[in-house]
Image 1 (spheres, rainbow, N blue to C red):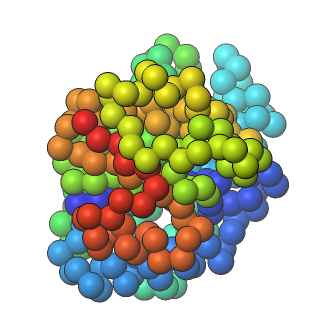
Image 2: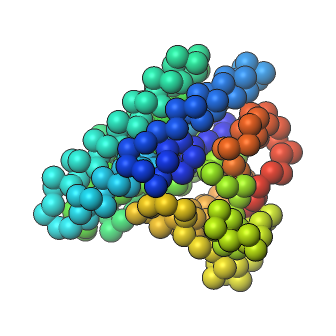
Length: 263
């Protein structure tokens, strides 16, 4: 089993409100279809970020302000609009995705995901379907509401579903010491372990564009914590923009593209 996240920075233009990159989504669907055809035993769970849909809606509506339930509704609706676009394109390209809306069952406590229905996900996998989750709003016992990122959802599901690998496919080639889209001196960090992470954490910067979930730093922190608790899992951060790379990562266990996070 492999978890694959399609970053919001890759499948949307995060500098423009509610703008999907349908050509990228379609190409990724082709690569996933080819990988499944090459290995019919491959199980995949896909997640995607909310990109310029959920993040812009959260920022504009004031999501997170106590009592601002309208913002919760608007942000969730924006995230779901992107999921419908992804679902429709994947189905048209022959990938049998089944969208699973996290907010329908997610429960958080002080920003941490503590409950999420897994029965429908397991059933979809058992029937050779591809579950599709996404970054979403969630009710929070402490904060009233929070955003459950795709990484947070993956971290919750990983101990239960035991994927061998987690692929995070964004707009850049991995984890860099700065924003490679703005800083030509930024260098690629090929490998990150929990032991080495404190030494490089200060070098990391936030993601390109609008991101209310903390950017690259939060993503790496989440995955480092995951491999520390689940040492059998290998995380790989790669670029969605390099044609064929997702298919390669899905079909080759020895792929070392991008940044690898492991215990």
